Length: 499
Image (cartoon, rainbow, N blue to C red; front, side):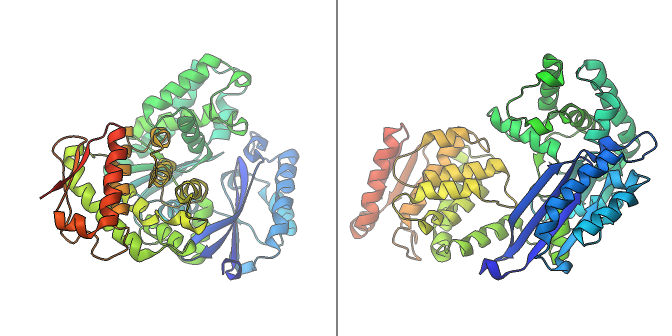
């Protein structure tokens, strides 16, 4: 039972915000039971001599009091509290630490920049599905970590003394947002990054993921504007121009940008533009975890899981009591169809086949509530649960496919997702529906050489089988004919041909 598994807590005393994450280890996956975040702006309380102000210390202690009550029921060995850049810099950090430890009744570790970077990396690889060399970027309030690694192996890492709060204090000191302020902020970041660039470029990276509030804000802006979740330099420059058009922090009104991120958005954006330029980054997505998740996985001794998406799906299959054998049958048929149709249907997006696989494995997740509206329930569940290893765009596509797994098509959901093109999303939905029908008997020989997929041209689908099969499998034959009718009504060619 979930309630019988022990709780673990990680607290991150950051330069801009304090965070607490409380989790359980359920069916091999980490399930968050509580997340608390408070903006304390600790870095803003540092003066030119790196002395933390009494006001900043008090803001931090007020937040610590919120955290302390929840820690009382968690075993001491399952708690880890780490402090980062601002408390590394503050000459009077001990004043805050001593008072905070008394409130928490637990020790606080001020971790080095290198340890912070390494823990962030482990949090990312434990919650993301990137393969090959991956560049991880985390823009904090007073430091920015950049790490290249593959699997558990960290190859390059640096923690730099630039962050969204310190850059706010250095370059955006009043309400006005100007080109000159951006230029100075970007140039200062480039100056810090330039001596490090060759090391990162020599090592190289296949993918780039970001793990910070700045990058979370960027993704929320992209989604609010119906764009792909992939962050590019072009999009960053466009957002910079948008903020310049507003001209002042007090006037900023960008869809998807929360009020609490507003003041540090231009400063974080400046740092990210500099990183993209100097490391020639083509695209970046949001990581599923970072420092807090890394702390948790290290406590568990499980920061090198097998493919994280497989682990997530396995956990959901157990949690929602999905018939694994049936899921595997549907998956086998859907991937067989995909591989046959891929070239003619131009299914070229690298996300398409994996998401179809996961949709096939999870298509019965809605049955845990009831049968009649199972697709709607499935879509809702996927939209509203944490799925480590899956990007938000992949989750939205998965949700849309499950909503369309049977009955009338809901095309609007396929249009709203941004993981693949609308045309590819429709193709995946068509394939999934066919696989489910073909496997409706829940028999291991669902196809068994009796059905093949012919694709005369783009968008057309021809199921080829024998008259004997159609006569001997009346239920499936009827359902397939009804599906032909549904797809034809939407202008999609689908026919059944006897061989």
